[in-house]
Image (spheres, helix red, strand yellow):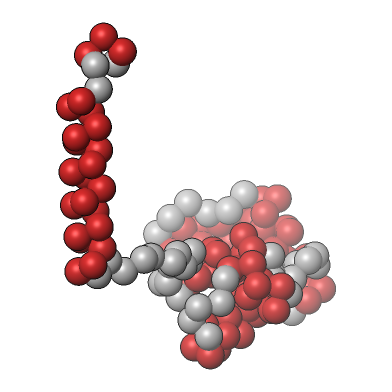
Length: 129
C-alpha cells in the first residue's frame, strides 16, 4: 500500500516521494487534526509583529523622540525597536546633536585668534619647541 502511495506521489508531483515513516506520520496527523499542516507552536509571542503598527504611529507623532524613550513608551526592547525601524519601516535611528551656527562676527574672532597664535609661535624661541 505504501509503495503505491509513493509511486502516485512521484508521478503526480514529479519529485521523490516521502519515506514510509513520513507517510505514516502524515496519516496520523491527518486523522488527529484533519490536516497535515503544522499546528501553531507554543512559546513566547513575537513582539516584533505586534509592534510594527504601534511603532509606525509613534514615529509619525514624534520624529525626535530617542530610541530608548520610545522603547520604554511602547514596552519593546531597544534591540527589537531598532530592528523594526530598520528592516520593516526602512528608517534609521539617529542621535540629534546640537551644532553651533557660525556668524560673520565669528569669522573675525577666529581670524584674530589665528593671527595672535601665529605671532606667538613666530616669536617663540626654536630651541624650546
